[in-house]
Length: 175
Image (cartoon, rainbow, N blue to C red; front, top):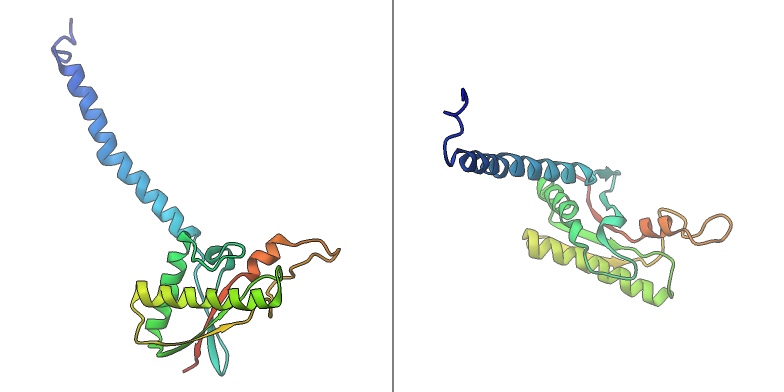
């Protein structure tokens, strides 16, 4: 009988309601923020590679394109936003976007696909980040200049290497 004053009629329902409200107003936002931070940390940070003549931004292939596709993948937004920020920070007015493919398919198909990939990156930067004041030049290089072998030393397929070769590179003049 000493705790009768705590559990008055209806007080259990109020307690349960307070627990639910606490969960939804404290735990859900915390969990969402934690997941967003985890996603942001898992995204690669783009770097500008500088030479005496030009700067390049190499975007990770596995982020941008699926096999035999020129459509920008939904998860590529963070990477492309970083590229747009770099271009703005450097006050770039002229950019060359080079598109690449893996070695599967004919040379003609890969050249066409690589040009479509370069154009997809340009379109994303112009349409979504407002870089319409930048003059873009597109270059489709197909399977040329692979960053990883498309085949393993024993001649078997190298899916990891092919994935890395499906990429786009943003090139702009060095200051």
